[in-house]
Length: 328
Image (cartoon, rainbow, N blue to C red; front, side, top):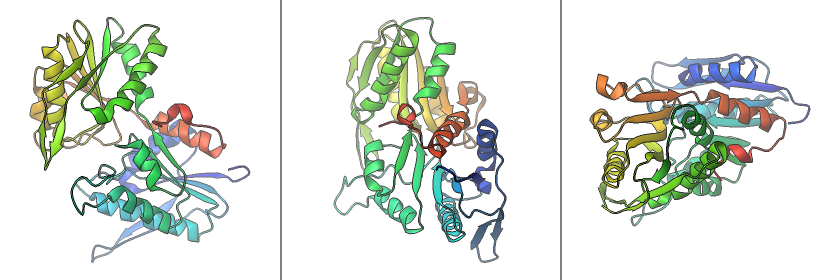
């Protein structure tokens, strides 16, 4: 925003991530206060003067051991409201992981569309813009909001990782379902441009109904190649393991999973320890606090997302384009 000073806040639940963004951005974190009351209610307020500032607030809204996704979402919304009341010229919510983004359409009668409801909550407190990293469906995310949105993609993180560690043989980018084909194709094209060589593609079949996943078909050319399975998140890991086994059966020599958000719910450690998966690469949008077991941890690589987020903030503040960082 031309002429407005930049202010960067990070709520306590995302303090470590916010500090990393501040270092990458070369800007200090602004001061604020958070208080918990005896009845479980919460208050947060800026201590630095936000009047006339271009404010960015960092809060990753995954459920954790100390605060639920609902807690983190409410804390973020209330703090944005306080900033607008304090006269902030523009407030951007920066959510490395945005909760409730997976339920973006009705698949059963009377289903909720929580992406749209969350968008209405952000808009109701005066949020001017929302930035999220690797949302489940970028088009649905963008369409749910009336204020501007930025759907960052983890592709730049994964391209750098593959260039540094996996550029020693043929590669194939694999989507674990039809819904992820755009994400997979974006990574495949970026890898081809970065490596200067062809990158193959693959697709696994998946149907989900009432929490049950089915489908056994695999299409694509992965024989003799390193299969790179790309997805937005890993929860229990069942989809990832099905895809890894299918790629192995189709002749892949190595299977590397590139997943932006590592939620690691119950059962994911056993999945990751399975020999069908050689390595899982995630960002630090969600710390792997749920993942246990030496076999699983030995296969895990965590990439810092703060430089990507900082680059986005720097450009948005200067009113510059971010199209090369976006998923859509």
